[in-house]
Amino acid sequence: MTSTGADYGLLSLQGLSVLAAACVLGYLVGLRAASARISPRLKRRQARLRAERPNVMAKDNGRTAGAVCECGAIIPGRCTPEELARHKASNRHARNMLRHSAKEVVACEEVSEYRAAAMALLKPTDLVLEIGSHVGGTTKFIASVAKRVVGVDQQPELVAEARQKHPDIQFENFDAFDAGKLLALKKSAEPDIFSKVFIDISGSRDLGTVFRLMDLIDNIIKPELQVVKSQPLKKMLLRSRLWIHHPDGPHNQLTEDNLQNV
Image 1 (cartoon, one colour):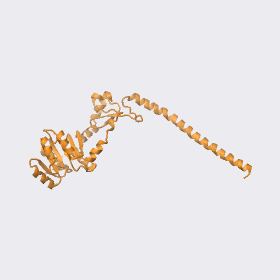
Image 2 (cartoon, rainbow, N blue to C red):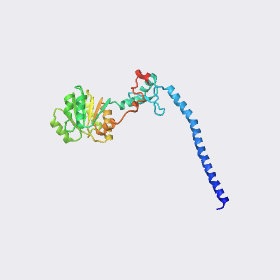
Image 3 (cartoon, helix red, strand yellow):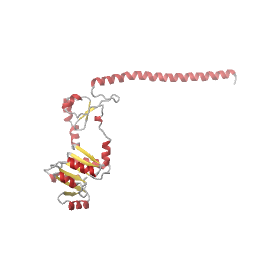
Image 4 (cartoon, helix red, strand yellow):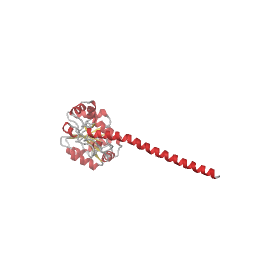
């Protein structure tokens, strides 16, 4: 290569280097300019939200938290008494109250917990329905503290053995997923109502089946308490929390008395 050719090649490389540097510099300048255009707008929006909702601003990217109604609906931001009354008169509130008629659910992992819950949570005035009564082992614990208990199991041989062992306790043989038979049992107990329901359909049963039965019981029996022996359910509940209870948000139930705190 001649001296002129070498000089030309060197100049070409230098020109490419300068061009590449200029492109990178232009890209960085463009990013900075775009950031400068967006940031003030975001800052103004966050400042406005803080001014409008000083008590509900969370630390998570400026998102707001709300309050929870007794029906389970989350009401974001501030809520006046008129807005609360409007929500409670809505179809959503009525529908949610029907869906969540059971006041409490207790999850147990094993038989000892299940029976301890019966001894601790039942009252002498309770009429109890036990789903999955087997041969009546837990049913007798329930009967010793409740007004009356009815055991249900889908296996006829187990029901026959339970009746033989505990002739003073009522046992019924049908599948608890049969809504018609559940409803008939509920009506047969009237004017008394099943205030509490105990469910043991195998502690390792999949959550989908457990939830389906709980929902059926909730809709038909409408108890104030469901005690469920389910390992998957207890495991899930132990690692769960409601977003409304996040430490950066209010976690009081939404009522007229605490609206000023929302």
